[in-house]
Image 1: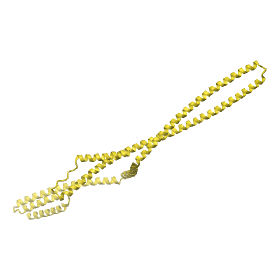
Image 2: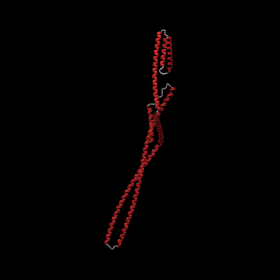
Image 3: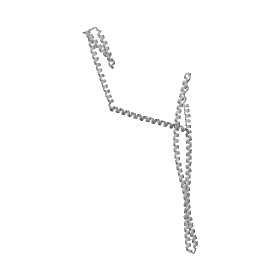
Image 4: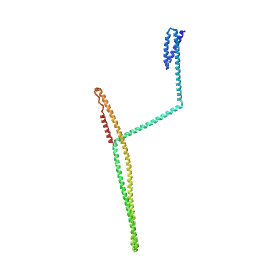
Length: 357
């Protein structure tokens, strides 16, 4: 019976070892297989014990431990199976959700929104690229204009001076035309008063002559002569009035035309003066921009000179180090040298800006 129990126990141990070998690839079971192997070693050690009671007790103890390990392993496997079932159910629900039409519609809507955003960003990128090219062309034009700017500024100032001088001459012409018009108007008034006085004098003379003729009825020939003279005087007065009126009307019309022409010329010169002032202001603004760009270029030049000086100093150190390792390195430029260099660059920049202005 003891031999049969030992053989059955050996078969169980062999089966357990086989199961452990098969389960060694499963995570969490490898440690259990090592424990079973350790227990098997303990069992072999007990089987070599010659005492039957101890051997039976060891066999029973080994049975209990094996059953407990198997139960623990089964519980762990059941837990792992439950975890896998839950994960499988979650994946199944997620898969069903992906196969749902609403989810597909949402994904398609998101894809269309992203495509629209990509197109919008592409359009904005093209716009920015065009703007960059335009700004680059404008900068090149300003750089090309910077060389011809002093001569252009001088010509514009000369044109402005000519316009101001022409405007002053037009003002003087307008003033002379106003004075002449006032003089002519005063002359017309004086001549009108003089004509009126002469007419009154002629009427009074005519009345006195009529009274004298009434007192001397024998002088018919004299009356005829006086009547003819009066008719001639009246005709001469009418002709003189008409001639003077036409003459003064022509003079007044000529003065008015000259005055209107002067006013038109003044308005045209004022418009030209305003345009020149606007152009001058724009050119002053461009000059300020160019000065600012010159200052920035001067700053960049100073920084570049500083970097070049440092690189030359380092290169000189590297060249001198293998040839004469015991020589002292050349000291860096002092603050006085840097100040002198920056002052020289600033003076050159100021001269360039003054020349441009």
